[in-house]
Length: 81
Image (cartoon, rainbow, N blue to C red):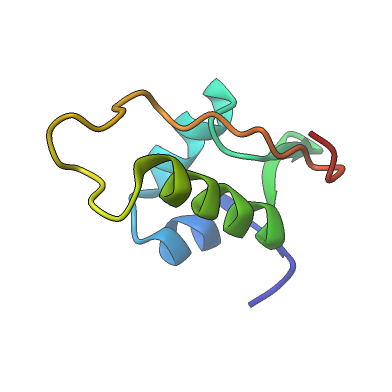
């Protein structure tokens, strides 16, 4: 898979609807940037975002009592926090 991904590629990678990726990008919940009006995603940052969510939610994500707030990206496109 490529280093820079489109919303469709990220949706396929995460196995979610493409509209979900656009919503997350607009809200700033997933590391992304616009290039000439089109959303782009760096794969390494998507992977870091997933890892951050896994650490935050623990091994039993989705069970009662877990943090249900949306995962906000603390990973910038420049690799700085």
